[in-house]
Structures are given as C-alpha cells and as structure tokens.
Amino acid sequence: MKSVALGFSLEAMSVEIANLLPSRKIPEGLNISKKYKQIRSSIEEIGLIEPLSITPEIQQSGNHMVLDGHVRMIALRELGHADVPCLVAKDDEGYTYNSRINRLSTIQEHYMIRRAIERGVSAERLAKALSMDVSHVNKKMRLLDGICPEAQEMLRDRQFSPELSRFLRQMKPTRQVECIELMLSANNLTVAYVEAMFIATPAEMLVEGKKPRKASGGVTQEQMAKMEREMASLRGQYKMVEESYGQDVLNLVLARGYLIRLLENGAVIRYLKQRQPDVLKELQAVVMTVALDQS
Image (cartoon, rainbow, N blue to C red):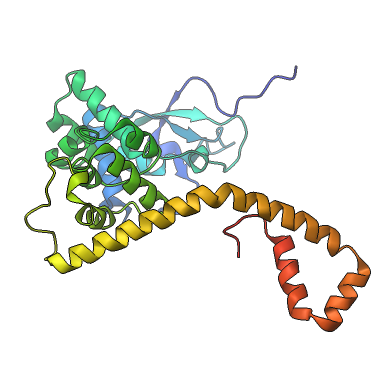
C-alpha cells in the first residue's frame, strides 16, 4: 500500500518573526476588528495555541512565507515576540487548510468554556482571553440549561446567539423541537425569529404555563393572537410537507425517468416542437431537475 505523504512537519520549529513574510495582503482595519482583539487577548493571556504554517526557507533570503496564521503573526509582533513556533509545509504552496475546515459551533464553544471552568479557570480569565464581557462568558456557560437533548442535537453543528437559548428554555421540549425545525427549514437562527415564535407559542406549551406579561417590542394581544394562528397554520403545513416529501421524491424520479425515455424518441420531439413548444420546454425542464427545490 502506498503511504500518504504528510503535508506539514510533525514538530514545530522556532522561527524569528522578522523572517516571516505574509503571502497575502493584510486587510485594512484588521487591528481594530473584534476577531483580532480576541486572538491578541488570547495570546497575551494564555500564549499561542496553534503554530503558524509556513513554507520552507526561501533560498538566499532565509525568509519564510506564512501560509496560515497572518492574524496571529501580527498579534505576536504587536506583543513584542521575537520567535514564533511554526509548522513547515513539505512543499511550497499557497494552500491553507483553514479554508477546508468547519469553524467552532456555538455548542462546541459552550463545552470548551464549561470544561475550562470545571478545571479551575475563572470566568474573568476566560473573558480576558476571549476579549469578551464576563456576562457573555456566563451566558455561553449556561447555554444548554433547560434545552432538551433532541434540540441540542439539532443545533450541534450550528452557530447562533446564546440569546436563542433564553427563549427556547421557556418552552416545553416538544415545542423546542418544533421551533428549531422551523428555524432550520427557513435557515433563520436569529433571536428575533425565535422571539416571534415564543410569543406565538400557546400557554400550554410553555414551561410556566402562562404567557409573558408584556411582549417584546410592544406587540398587542391582537397581534399575538394573529401570530399564534399563523404559527399553528405553518406547523400544519410543515407537517404535511414532511409527510409527503418521500412520496413526492419517488414520483419525481419515476416521472423524470419516463420523460427521459419519451424525449429520446425523435418523432415525439418533432411533434412537440411543431404543435406544443411550450409543453416541450416544461418537459425538458423536468428532465433537467435533480431535486424538488430546484426551479
């Protein structure tokens, strides 16, 4: 069996920061961005966790091109570091593996923060390392309190505001799952959306069994009643679509297979071109369709 060549060295080597050159243009205003401040604070508080990725040494100049870690390099320079731990690429290329990985989800971040606090790291130190307010760290720490396991699983790989949990935990588990299904189907995991669904939730589906005294944004009782009716209708429509989806897909596959065979017949094509060109256009569109949501 042919062995797979490693893309980077296994051991990090220390390189003078003066010998590191950027491989791309640094965006203007980077040093005032929130992400930069978080990375700088993290390095200042707990040190560099992930080494930079660089090319092999450039002949004559002795410099290295940075493949991945430009923000960390700038933060390290600003903090006065002379040497930087780096992983050297086996070949000279501009590929950065960070473009191929998924960023940390909100729930994964919650587990990391909770684990750090359980091991004795204070919320204040975490807040300083992550360049955020202590109250925000505490919200991320309590992210899954009152959230049912099914809802947690549905949100596992998603990024969302911790404020989302504040509304979800006031609902009963079945309602939590319903709301998340609707948010995911609409690709809308915003606080405003979940708040609207919370307001439209019947009292019997809330943990406390009663509506909040005052809705956010001054929503009237008539508006709340209308939202409840619309939400109930939307839930019914969603369930109907969910139940018929499998049969609809099967029908599409069978119809598409039949039309492919039909349109392979030259006589049929000639007849439709002469007599029913609009119908032919629609049939060809069905043949080209590969999914129900494709227009």
